[in-house]
Image (cartoon, rainbow, N blue to C red; front, side):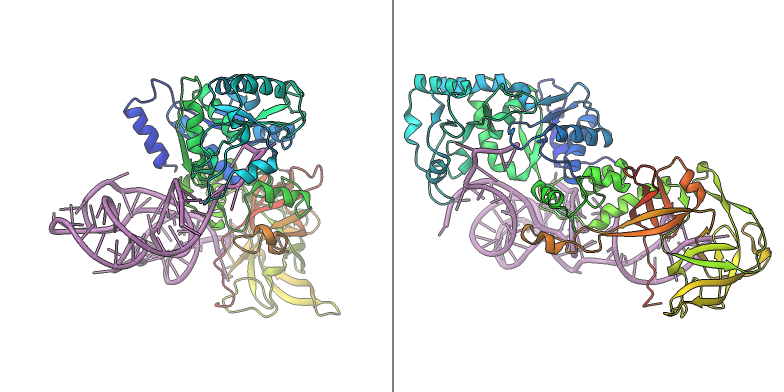
Length: 549
RNA sequence: UGGGGUGUGGCCAAGCGGUAAGGCACCGGGUUUUGAUCCCGGCAUGCGCAGGUUCGAAUCCUGCCACCCCAGCCA
């Protein structure tokens, strides 16, 4: 099903291979997350790209944690990221690195720049640096410390490392061009002082390298043949190249940028995801409504569905916002052929079959009509059942194919019944249906000749298992939630908790994902312990339009 | 009024001078003991706009326009 992609990046790699410009190297890529949050489906796009091309061209990929800012990073995130990457099906055994692994080498390269007069210690305050950087339309002014001698810079930089100065007292800057139209080239900061404990290097360092200095050097040291990143780094490419051109390193990877993923009805920025978690709008990073891989996993989405989604959206440089229906399509497509079918009643309405006298009758149904390898299961039948409240209408709309007074319907894998009497409470609400069944209409041996228009699902009133069903919908009610209106944009109905029933075979099954026939795909919640909780992954497609009949 | 990018149907996206792939969505119809799946069919006289080059332009040239990114000691 998955024909291979051929986006501009793969075309570029193919060309490099054809023209033999990789110096005999295998294709080497890297996925470089900062461990300051959980991975989301946008990262999946990058992961599938980086690990995907390496796999296709017979190379390998580093999982490199970009851990240069101890204030924001945490070990919890590195563990979660590793789990997510593995879950997606990619292996980084022997290729897990951390920018912090290279701190010593990075420092040496920085000293090299200082010795060459290409970097200097600047003692301006953060405020002053910003003020002298200029604006988009005005050039910056050179720092008064720009002319500091090499010896003094070397001494100061060494003392910065030694911890002699407080945070913010000095900074190491590249000496490039304060008048450059590219702000990134206006003597960018290379190192800053941070007296903070790093999750890996603890208190070994009090100076930490900046992204622009770190990233390109790590790429070079690891022999990355294609450094793929998102569009916002396009402006950083001249700096990426400048650093590698001005230090003594014998490898210079090309940085290639592609557009990040935009998805309707959700947010993808780590900042906003943090807000959702920290302000309690969702239950956590793995809340099934989150676009995080942990959330999607808990929701019941498979890695295959995500991979297929990433394949279908492609890789380009165009800004894009993909419709949620594409993701849902991929999820359904994957589950359609693999998920066993079962019956689950979400909003139960009790029915009594008054002429049924049987006891302990067991019916049989396949776990999957098309995929017979999944086998069959037994369904206990009885006089008291639950059906879906939606499947009954006192006054049926046109073309209604379910149950209504005096009408017949087939109970899936069981008998045809007819609704004879509707019982309501004081408020007029339907509380029970009294029906009769046709003994000769049993599924598989039907000789009744009856042809009801519809088939509905059901559950045995006593022998089915009570279950909580969490019905998830999109987290936001608007296609493009705004950072400033986050709370307002939330969908108040993104979660509806129902108390329903599932057939006993589903409750007892080892499987975690099911299609509850006619209602949707569900997944046993992995965080609920012994309690039987199902998360609705996605509904079934529904072309029934009651208003149009 | 700086720099860097991007513009092909509602949403993605092929196309790389030879006369607009494909997918999702949507709309018809068929099959169906899931209003699901599956199967058929429909869906851009036009590629941001305007000129130009050419026998021929989404593809080349020129000029406009729109949108995105950049002024962290974040990544």
